[in-house]
Each structure stands twice: as C-alpha cells, then as structure tokens.
Length: 286
Image (cartoon, rainbow, N blue to C red):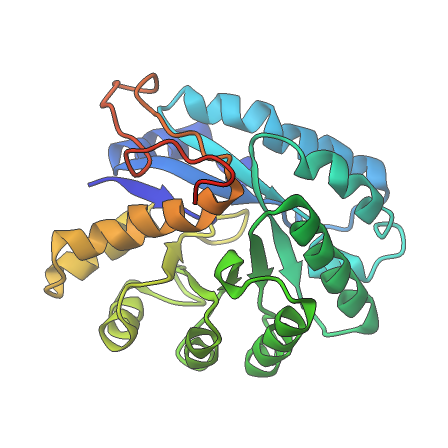
C-alpha cells in the first residue's frame, strides 16, 4: 500500500515518526505552514520557519524514504496580529520555490476583517503563481466559516479545481462537494474526524476529490492515521483501487497542478521505484 499524506506538520514530529510512517507505506507528504502554538513576534520568525520547510525538513524526510513538499502562507490565526501582517510581502519569494506546491494554510479562524484581507490577498498570490490553495476551516462556527470561505473563493475567480477546503466533517462536506472544490478531512484521535466516520462519508460521497490526512502536529495526533483509515476502508469493503485513489492518486492529482511534485522516489529508502502517477508532472501538462 502506498500513501501520500496531503497535510501533516512534520516539523513538530520526531524522526521515529518518519520511520514509522515509511513502514506503514507513506512515501510522500505535504507539510503546510501553520501556527506553531505560540505567537510569533516578527516577520523574521516566519522567514526562519519557511526556510526550514524548504530546506531542512525535506532533507530529514529523505533520510527515511519519504518525499517532502510544503505549502506556504500566512495562517488565519496570525493574520490578526499586526506584527505578522508584513509576511504577505515575503510570500512571493517562497511561492517561487520548487518544493512549494500550494499556498496555505489560509482562510478563517475568527472571521475578522483582517482575516478577510489576508485570505483575499493570498488567493490573488496563488493565481499569480499558478498554485493550488489549501483552505483551513475555522474550529469555531465551522459551518458558517466554510460557507463564507466558499463565497470568497468564488469571488476571487480562482478555479475551484485548484482549491482544497480542509478539516471538513459531516456538517460541512455537502457544501464543499457541491462547490467543485476538493474535500479535505483530518483524522485525529479524539477530535475532528475518526476512521469510521470517514469511511461513512466516503460511502455517501464517493472517493473523487477526497483528500484524507493525519494533520499530525504538536497536539494529540497520530501520523499513522492515513494508514489506519486506509485499512478501515478495506475492512469496510472498499476495493484496493479506491484506497489507492484516496491515498495516492488524489493527492498527486491535486498538488500535481503546481507542476512541482517530485515524480520519483526510487532513490529514496529501499528504492521501491514508486512513481507519482507514472508520469512527470510539469506546468502546462496537467
């Protein structure tokens, strides 16, 4: 079984996690930039963090046979902090980097005017750089936040096939499914979604445009939730091809729109020769 985790915060994980993930079948991942648990105090702290996402972390992942990519953005929580706003001027420098496959996480936390402005500005940057977008739905008032996010996406004019709306659940999935955006689900030990609920959603909505991730970070989380959900799908009667669609073809299809996915992992780990969709993915050949 091959697995591509489309949303996991490896900067907060240990090398033991990389080893366990590889053994569970993970061969590729995307690490979105995010809030690190305490307020950042200057734009310089973002620069150091972004440098780690495009430099040190891909190297660390490669030691365990995993291809690492990232998304770069100003997250909604920090969009409200005036000390962080100027990071929007730094983003274009990083959005041009090879390992950056989307803009994000962006969206809403408390649905403030400041978040509105940061959201719109980053959607514009995504369009300029021809990159996909990873949208974070708020933890509070999630249904209203999801619908407001979809309104902003429509108003921006960015193609919906380039957008994934993440951290969905049973209440929010229908609106996103109808929008044409990709649907993202984070599988957590105690909060968000669990494996059985995810399987039920896929029974109702199918597996197309579905991205299932562990979103593992510094909180109580599990970087093997992708593997566990894949096995739950098999136990529920899904065909192996459907599992491969969710955990490989879909992440490749979505992030491949960036033109920057590393298409070979044959030089990594045990050299199993795994390829991304079997073809090179270049800008203009989507």
